[in-house]
Length: 292
Image (cartoon, rainbow, N blue to C red):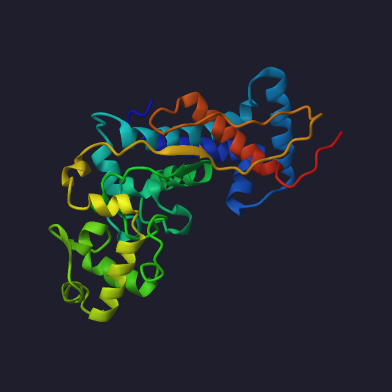
């Protein structure tokens, strides 16, 4: 269970200690493979097939990642979580964007997470490395007005990706769709120009048009209709394992099928743990030929 924030640092120590013994930590930090990790992965797979359990020295690492995924799960969908307000406050420091739960639907790999605490950095990294989310045919998160403007896969805009635009928008506090709107309509180019100071009205008009066009049609239709949604739990997020398909040979001794995941809200601790394990070891074995 996740009772308080202090569980984070102890989890970090367990991960480092386990990583030093198994080679997992070194490979994760380098972003690549090494012989130790490959050997550990193969040994772990063999041990799992024979005993149904993973090697003891790897369990703290996987348990730590599972713990962090559960922290995200409870943060988004838990009820009366005593530490939620503190967690949101710490997450809002990331890139000074004032995002909290919104971070879990963004491209975290392209973001600088260093402004928040080490524990929440590890939560976000575990999230982005173990799970993929799908927002196809989904609801806004949590409502259309709250859709983040930056690092959002749903808003594909060349202009909004510009560091120059982002710098001026952050300074003006314009980081979400609602900041481009006034009541039930879009702000005028002159209004946006006045707020951002250094940007031209023509540029603001083009940018506003790009953002409006990039939003899914259902989102555009919902703008201004349900402002109270921000105070409700976000809609369920469809999740899957962050691993490509691995083609096992027909006569292979080992099977590495991923657990079936549906939504983060309904995911069990066991399925999250198995996903952490299999994503980690599938990555360590990627590109290697099977031996007979």
